[in-house]
Structure formats: structure tokens, C-alpha cells
Amino acid sequence: MQGLAASSKLSLSVVVVLFLLGLASAAAHGRKRIVSSSSDEPCTKMTLYLHDILYDVVNNTANATSAEATKPTALSKSTFFGELVVFDDPVTERNALPVGKEVPAARGQGFYFYDKKESFNAWFGLSLVFNSTTHRGIINLMGADIMSQKTRDISVVGGTGDFFMTRGIATLQLDANEGTAYFRLKMDIKLYECYV
Image (cartoon, rainbow, N blue to C red):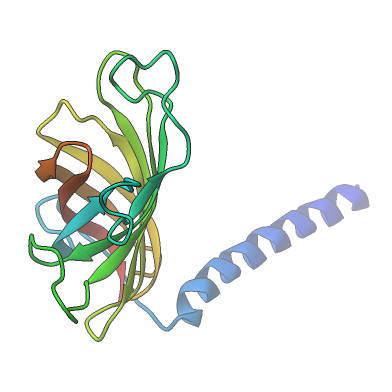
């Protein structure tokens, strides 16, 4: 009987400690959690443009921001199935590449791989790394990029700094492309859980 009582007290103690650790985690950063009450009213929203310039030995060695880490498989035919691309792309607030000493709003760092044999489809995993006077921190995004759709959503799964523990949706849309050498993605980002 005493063993059961001691076990119950221990279990209750563990629950209380875990609860307090959860509260301390948010309090330790001195932030208040804001959760949007409506899908129409995110706590933060922004539009950004990711510019991807695929490495090509002949034409753009100096300007490339991404490179194939693997080649397409024999199964791919013309869909790049199995190809993995790693990138460190400039991200801007307007739909033009930075010119001269203009600094991008962020860097998009991550990878995408083509994961469908019959048509173009990719999976993205990326971090938007902000280091400016406007924003500091990281937004992490991931999900399927179903290219046959005009717009597609990927998940915002967390962040750091100004975007501490954020969650939301990034709606992607192809804004421009030049064959396989360059593409620009418009990202409408809506954050529904923010800490301020």
C-alpha cells in the first residue's frame, strides 16, 4: 500500500515538474504567447521572394545559389526524380534580385528533392535566416511542393529569435523562371502562433 502511495506521489510530482518546466520555457524568453483566433487573422504576415540560381559549370559559377547534391535516377525520364538540390538563396521583400550593395531580407537555406516519377513534384525543407535591423532569427518551413498546383501550402514548423516557436503556413507560388537555371518563388507567410 505504501509503495502505491509513493508511486502516486512520484507521478504527481513528475507532472507538476513538467508543467512548471513548460511555463518556465516561455517565461525564460520573456515572451507572451499569441494564438490567432481566426484563420483570417494571423498574428504576423509577410510576403517574401526566394531566388534560386542552379549551379551550371559553364554559365553561372559566380552567381549560383544552389547545386545538385545528387543526379536524377534512371527512373526519372524528365522529372528529375531522385535529384537532391541544396541551396543558400537570397530572399527579398520585392520580386527582384538584390542589386549592388543591397542586402537581402533573409537567406533561404535548405534543400529540396524531386519525389515523383510521373510529373514534377518536390519536397522542401528550409530555414529563412534573418539578420537585419528589421528581423533577427529563423523561420523553419517544410512540406510537399506540388508543382502542378498554382499555389501550394507548406508548414511553418518553428523558429528562433523574433520568430521564437512560431507556427503557421507559407503559401508558395512560382513567380518567374528561366528553364531549370533560375526560379523565383513568392512566399505569402502567415504565422498563427507568435511569441512577443
